[in-house]
Structure formats: structure tokens, C-alpha cells
Length: 478
Image 1 (cartoon, rainbow, N blue to C red):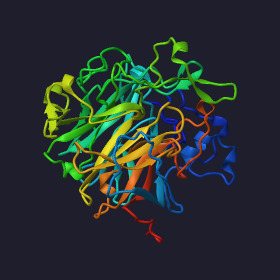
Image 2 (image 1 turned 135 degrees about the horizontal axis):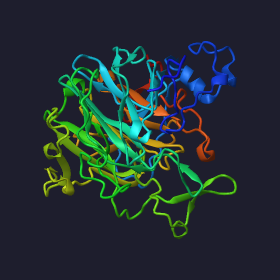
Image 3 (image 1 turned 180 degrees about the vertical axis):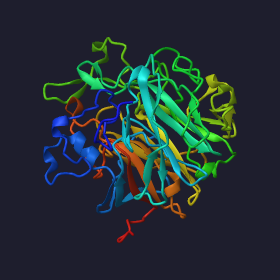
Image 4 (image 1 turned 30 degrees about the vertical axis):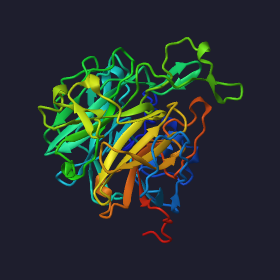
């Protein structure tokens, strides 16, 4: 591990493994304090130095722009999201998925950046590294972040990256999953630079029995993954980048004591795959006639942030079962009476949700105040531009799911959205949205702004309030 001197927090600009810039000549004498006029600094340095800032802006409702072909009915009980303006930026790294442990702390993976003086990059092939941290405190704008141990190195080969996904701390044991990405974080095709356009297999879980201080390696590898997929290198998967459903402190609200995992996926023979792109003479992205694209490149149809379906699995978590595919059950549709069907045969897995060319990274949290599940989905195709995110709700984890809001261009490039259960109010109406944003400003000529203010390729928490039918934002939210 290389530690960059004098940078307590370093932003490595999200998911691009080649973007570890130092900019020695532009470094201020005291990197912990911004100079009075910091505009001469490179954008990446400035973003890193602005970590750990509390901000308050005017409250607003993000407009909902639900596409006409949305397959989900509108929620009858939740109609929108009000951002109160309270938000907080912590550090210059992303991939935060907090799990609320029995000791009251949150534990989360992180990647591609730095925390507490340590840095890592998960897109380094044989030397891909991921971090882990504890998040101490009960106030989301006063958290203390500390690494539990140095970043862990694990090979992604034959893929290019190995990133954090499902993370769960249950009964004192931390289960830390990773997933593979390929071919690279800056893959060139038809003159366009794509970010990790192929989602790969899930090489199981690393295990810690001492709050992340020491780790047992997963018995699985990219060539021998936990689930029997993909059928070929760079082929599609179904339980891609799986994330644990957040059931609260020590899985308090699991319906049956089991851990549930949501994965994103696509089918081998997609009837309507994502299109090829090129830049026209004016620098605009335009679709290419499929007959003019002879390469077998899948155009990020299933990438780190774009998918067609959501799949569901469950397991009784323990060190003995978590890496044993035979211990898992998979959602296999519904029977004639509409009841969920579960199977131990992975070949019989069926989508929990499907919206072709509109799905992607998925997380879900149980909200005990509302007795509902809230799901965050981000469709980030084509992997480097503005991204759309939407919120679904359901009374049961197996659905039916209903749409609350569709936030077009949220971030404007927000990703890895989730609602940490620790910060849900007793009535379930006020929550904190965790996400990162804008890792690739300027890629392929795509320009983006920070919206909401404060978005960046690091850990960001925004306070939100769920709105019911006919409700207006509070005039003086406190």
C-alpha cells in the first residue's frame, strides 16, 4: 500500500483505476486548510480537501419525472422526497454501504480514495484493494470514520477490478463481499471511453470476527465464484454486485432471521440491448446503427451501474454458510396463488423486478416506522454521463413494488444510493440518503454540475423527508 504524504484524505476520482493524481506542484503548504483563493487548485485536489464539511442549503423537492414505460404502479402512500438542505461530506472515496452492528456502530466498505490516512484502489487487477471502516456516532453529521485495518488486497484476474458489494455485520461477524468488473475502468470503444462496462462474478465473502481488525479470505475466486455465473468471460450475470437488505441493527427486522441479497443482472439473449454510441462532429453522443458496430462489445448493457433486472437470494448467515452456494435460496417467481416461490437451484432463479434498459445498482432498507421497504435503483448507463435514480416501496421484500419518485439526472451523477437504517426517524418519515457523485466530470466531453450541492466522488449524507399524497414540504423544517 502506498501512502501519499501530507494528504490525510485523498480523492482518487471514483472508479477509474488510472486516476490517482498527485499534482505535487499545486499542493498547498498545509493540505488540511484551504488557501483563501483556492480556485487555482485542480478540481480533484479541491474536492479531497473539502471533506468533512457540514452544509445547510435551502430545502427542495426533487422533481419526479417517471418515464411513460415505467412498469411499476405509483405508490398510493408516498409521493415524493423533500431534501431538507442538511447534508454532510466526509471523505474522498466511494462505495459506502453501512451495516448497523449490535455494538451500535456502523461498519462499511470503501474504495477508490482514502480514509483516515489510508488509500486504496479496487481497479488494480491482481492487486485490487478495498478498505473497511467503522462509522462511530449517532448524529449523521458528526460521525467519526476510522479504518479497522489496512485495505485488503485480492486478485480480480482475469477481470480488471474487484470492488466491495454486500456488507453485513451480524452477531459480531462481518461478512464483506466483493464483485468483479471488466475489462477496465477506461475501456475505449468506437472513440468513447466507458467505465467498467462489464459486470462480472461475485467471488464470495471475506469474514472478520473481530470488528474488521483481521480477515479470513474468501474460498472463492473470480474463476470459481460463489454463484455459478457467468457462462463465459465478460458474459452477463444475475446476482451481480449483490447488496444485503438493511434490516436494521443486527438484522433486527429480518422477517425470518435470514439475510437477503439483491443483485442486478441481465439475460444472455437480451431482446433489446443497450445501443452503441459515438461522438458526432459537435461532440454529442449519438447512437450507432447496430449493423455498423461489428465488435462483440456489450455496450455496458450490464455494467457496474446499469442492468435490466433485479434478483433476490437469501441465506441464514454464518461463517459456515455465507460462502456455501448450497445454503442459499433464490427467488423463483410466484405460484398460481401469487405466493413467492423459493428454490435452491440457481438455474431456476427469476427476476424480482424487470425494466429493460432502466435498472442498475440496487439497495433496499426496511423502514420500521412505515413498515415498508424502500429500494434505491440507479440506472447509470452509459457509465460515464448523468445518471437517473428512483425510489420504490413495498410492504414485503418480494413485492409488489411501487414507485415513489424518479429523479432524473440526480447528482447529476449520483451512484451507490442507500438509506442507512440507523438514521431513520421513529415515524419513518425522515431519513438520510447516502451516496457518492460526479466521479467522471468531462469524460467524453460530458459536462456535469453538482446537484444537489455537495455531490462528489466521496461519502455524502443528505437528510430527506418522505412526502405523502397532497403533502407539501414543511415551511420551517427543523
